Structure formats: structure tokens, C-alpha cells
Length: 255
Image (cartoon, rainbow, N blue to C red; front, side, top):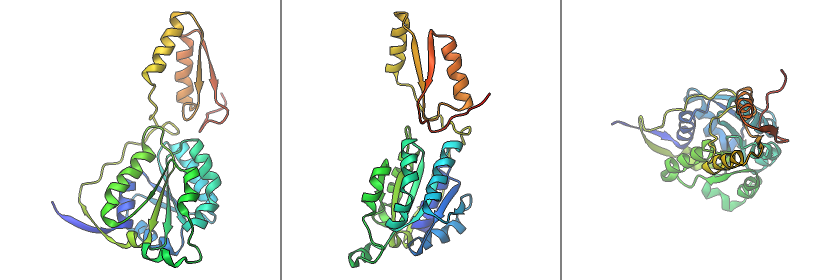
């Protein structure tokens, strides 16, 4: 099997594409230029420039909710991340699968406390399911596997990736064909990730056995037209009623 050398930025984007990511909402700066260049080399990921980081994070959240697929952001250091925190908060609440890439100074440069050096980890934690600092080129493949497993797994959410420039610039060996294939696209707004626990099914059976009404509370991405129609069929076969949470991730309204 032949081996091709790629830098860390190529490896990150190729891993994203292999997991079905096809868009990147970006407001990059100098520390992200290697990733910007790699976007030209990795087919299948469309870069969309946002003139404010809150637009990028809001667009990524909305795209993930409607498409059911993960979205990528690219932000500039801690101050850039700080400008996008409000919509990352919304994405976290909706459990939107967003991979939030934040560039950082080179690891060897952090000790010099440049003007935009900041505690990115502390900014990211309140709005992220996980924060992963890309430590070095050797660890990159395993760390990226963790990033996309968390973001697109059951009850996924925002994963913030802190990407130092020297790790993005470094050569990373990669065997051809080693990446996972992209998962098939889900119907719009319906990820299909939800699995009803056995305990919930047992509770419904117990309620029915005692002739108690069953209330189905719909939230997250269960309120698309497809989800509502399925819930209506279930409710129609039960002595029960349907309710929706106040702030679902996505909801189809109208006739």
C-alpha cells in the first residue's frame, strides 16, 4: 500500500470530508492560512466566508439542524471564537453536530504571549461537548477520529478543535484508503441518531398495562414533518397525547 504525505491541515479536512462534512463557514486570520490553502486542495468541502464570527457559528448551527449533517467552522484565535460564542451556545443546546476549528499560535510561540494569545480552552468549554487541542502531528489521526466520533455520534454536539499552526503545517503520513467513507446523508433535519432506550419502552408498556395515558414529548430533531407524522401514528394507537418542548432544534410548522 502506497503512502502519501499530507500536512496536518489536509489531514483534518480530509477526515472531515470522509465523515460527510461538505461545508465550512469561515472567518480566518493569519494563523489559519494553512487551513485556508488546504481548502483549495481537498475537494468536496465548500468554504463560505462570513464577515463576522457570529454569522459563521449561527450558519453552521442552522445548516446542521436542517441538513442533519455536521458542519465545520474556521475561526481566528480566542478573540474570534469569543465573537461566535452566542450561536455556539444555541448549537450546544440543540445538540447540533458542529466541528468548531479555532486556529492557534504555534506551540513554540505561546510562551511569548502575543497580542491575540488567550485561553481558548476556557472560552470553548461552556459551549462545547468536547474541546480537543491538537497536540502534535503524531497524535493527529487518533485525535481527529475522536473529534468526529463525538460530533456525529448519538446526542452529538459542538466539538471545538484548537489547531496550532505548527501542527497544521507539519507533514502527517497517511495511508491511502485509510479514511472512513462518508455516511449517507440523512433526510433534512432528521439525523436518525436517536435510539429509544429499552427502559423507556418498558415504561410505556407498564403504563398501557395499567390503562394510564401516555404522553409523548417531542424535541430535538423529532419535530420534522416525518417525525410528527410518525408520532401521530403512535399516539393514534395509544390512549395518549403529543407535546413538544419549548425550544426544539428544528420544527416543521403549518398544514
